[in-house]
Image 1 (tube, one colour):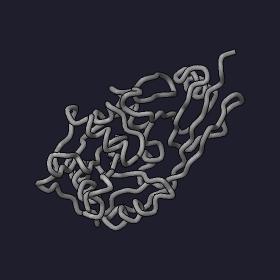
Image 2 (tube, rainbow, N blue to C red; image 1 turned 60 degrees about the vertical axis):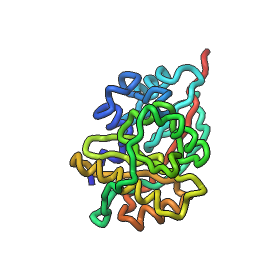
Image 3 (cartoon, rainbow, N blue to C red; image 1 turned 120 degrees about the horizontal axis):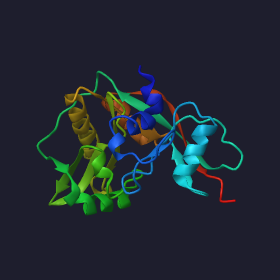
Length: 228
């Protein structure tokens, strides 16, 4: 399997999402109103750490979702987390039911409200710009959604999968994951996704509909050296 997924954020920000990227050299990020994701190349050296420090500024926060070498003196590791990366297998059946709707700029207030109530992970006012977002409405209200995030060449990540607690147990999450995956496959790409290592219910759901575990991923939050 392509090792582009080992550096998915970097491959996205220097590839299909380069038009959204901020930074230069060996450090890139999405605009703050789109996503907190940042990325560096798979091999880190003094130039990489220097470019990352310049990108976030003195004392700034860097959020990296890749394997990193021990940071140089002055950098502080604020948090480390572990998750899993899963890819769509042949068992994944995809379709877009009639009750699934496309979401866009006009839906952002409702999307942000749903995210605030369900906490699927980082989601900002401009996150919808990363790709296709789909939702399900009940009596006009948005009760579930899922969409696309990181986009390395040939692959697209499914993210922001969330359902209003009052509507859980109806299969809306799996419906939306299948629907988003359908659009990805229609472009000739392969869906993948991430889940927190402790989110056993999500991992179980993704396995049940046809996603396969690829590898464990590490997420690191670092603080850059402060101003002299």
